[in-house]
Image (cartoon, rainbow, N blue to C red; front, side):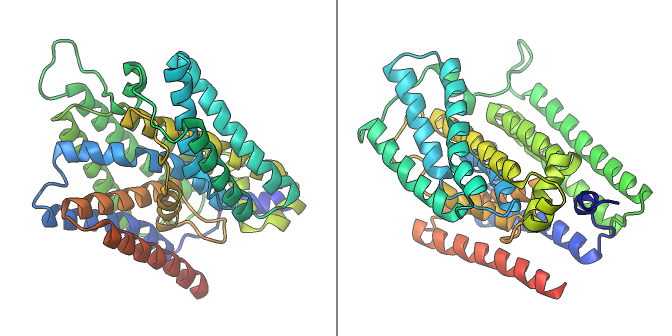
Length: 394
């Protein structure tokens, strides 16, 4: 076995402590949801509020997928909020002021996001300038460019098809009114597919000698996940159905989960974050890999900016302010390590939902924004302390 193969191979054993940590994240989300459901007198799980919860956190989840790759690779990106705000402003200028077709404008904005990621990634990957410094500079630059582009004013509204990117819903069968059957069927198929895929993956790992932890915990976790998917689908189907942005998120989550777990590129990113020098000595092109993660992050930040702008139906100078904090917090709460090399897509998604449920629940309860920030800060600190504690025990 050569050095790269050794680096890319998965650990031979999965101990119960790590397994419990993975299950504990899902249990924490369920516990938080139950807590706020009780404290808000049942408001949290109402169909209208669940729809708003998805729409309000869609951009965080989209950016968390890219941030996961960046953090796993051993870097950080502080500019994502400013980039999202800048792309929203750019889209508004093209579509509203210059009348560019929304499809062309969307493609150009995604390309612009990738170019921004490439510009920052170039200095980080090939010139070894710390990502914290480069992206901090980017945060300031693109915040200033957003203000300059909008000249301090808001621009909108947008054409209806562009608004549907965030505010639209999956259409139902012709003539169907009331309960959205199509959305319920899609939700049921997703729940079954997730359970089957998880079981198949576990059996395949056991076939090759990997220990997967308690089977009872495995079944419990997947039943909880499937139950949540079905319940969420039922609630949404009883309102307007599945939002378009939820489908976009689902496709992105499935794609990045596949990349990080089933491809050589994904394993190389983990190897890069785990030990960059060893990865380079093994033949991995670490510079190109890091460069690619920032391009991906830039495009996802652009997409998130488009989704957020479409939801507001206007581009504002303050769009994107503080987004990077929620995105980074979601990834760390989801189990990613601050030192790189550790983190999972579903962990980042669950972390984003934990942040979203807390924001939504505290807002319904009337908790001020000041105390909301305090609570979120403490939760983030607890997640990082937990990560360091587990590392020290190894």
